[in-house]
Length: 239
Image (cartoon, rainbow, N blue to C red):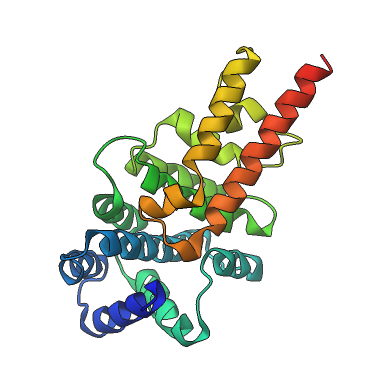
């Protein structure tokens, strides 16, 4: 049974019985999948991405077709499960709880309890991918994403590095994308680059709870890391 079959069954159960929105959803993930920690992580990631995408759309005030396409790039949802995903999306949008409540609950569900939790960074990265789909991250989206990062305990340096991966590198700072200070010896830059590529290998992401169906996040992240490294290497070669 695929992650989508399990998620579809879960959403069907929760959407028909929930009375308090996110609180019920989070508790249901904990109890329904209590016997399978790996599956619970994958379902938790999926629920967090769908719910927070819905809250971001509500904060922005409009859902564009570009954002829908970006959502579908991350979530390669089988046609038979599209309706169930839409039900969870609508449930999150209708919930009177604000996005901060959602983020706090999702951090408890997905996070490690430590700052800069990589799984929470994955969720933030996915939200950036959707937000930038129409060509730029709008002001309300930027405020939303920054606040999510604060709730997720992602420090400012990490946040800026994530954000830098989603801007045009023609105007961005490749050192910021790699999370390394400008002026460091090239060997340190190369070491940092290799670590980032290794950390973002699809197998590593799946091991920490990112469902295989969502590897688009890793693909776009590694592309940005590669582009930043190549820009630095090119600049140093021509210096």
